[in-house]
Image 1 (tube, rainbow, N blue to C red):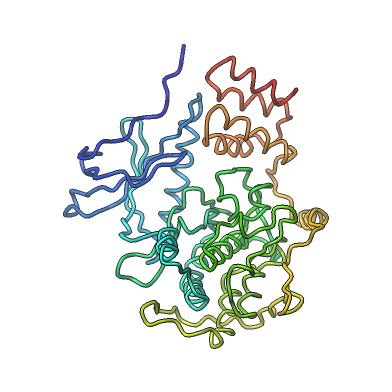
Image 2 (image 1 turned 90 degrees about the horizontal axis):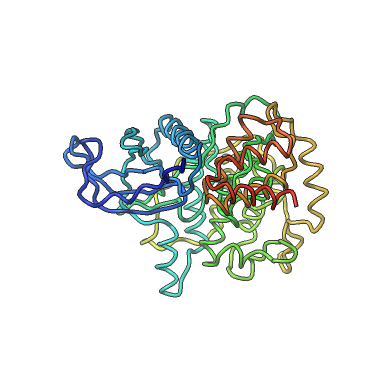
Length: 416
């Protein structure tokens, strides 16, 4: 019996959902669903956001995998109550669709704000980015205190509400709650969460997150650092990193003080243990250099959070050899340092024994047949059955491909 596709059509404007929410328009669409602007008829037609989970792939377990992701985000958002995170309002399921309801943030993403500036031949100045970091780092500190890693920080997922000065962190769709985040005394503790290419945008997420599925608070701080240099330079990360050495070359595209460059270098450190390990560490160093930054124009001044001082914090590691000829922090001999670092990481009890490169290849091949939902299926398969052999792992994934000939081709491509 052939399976009916799981993809449902876009909900038309004017449709009443759950006998309460009136759809106004589509705000966005991605591999795992759609986002709508809606009015809540039980709250005086207050604007809200309906996030529908609608995977583009089909397979016997695709809807269940998507439901797990839906529950994960709902659980995360339910715990977070912060003025710079959209308020979680409700979640429900109806007509085979899954919905989250969140506060509507009427404003622009920092991607949009950067495009506006670029159209005028400008980007963000150092002082603006310093203040922006000071306003955003306390939000990350709050999130990490709740043992949650965002995993997808980028200019697309940070907004500036109209008429307000504080940035808002949005879209925890691929966020991960790490139950044992604080159960170790190691400052460099990492958690294996399963390989998901959906986790973080390429160029923004650090290598251990994209390639090995490892994440920690420093992973979010790395992505925040990349976002900062994108705002400063107006260029995509692919233009800011040397394609052969994989070293950051952002210095050529902006003009910042040496002290701030050192902070950015430490945020962007390739090896996780060389990065800042907490938002408080970054804030402390930014406070030390705050008086040396140029004064912002009055039109762009923002309200600063209370000063955060970390007693006994480690001094800034100078990653550049000289102000005249700055060198990047990335070593050309990365593989050995990575191997050494991950040998030091405490093994996770349910970590898969499969080769991470093989996992990545399986996910890429599966995505060819069923779309972005492949990454969620791979993660859930590893979490539920971590000790599969390569053959068993491929068989589990092949079941998600509804067409028998395509499933056969999938197996053949992996074992040829």
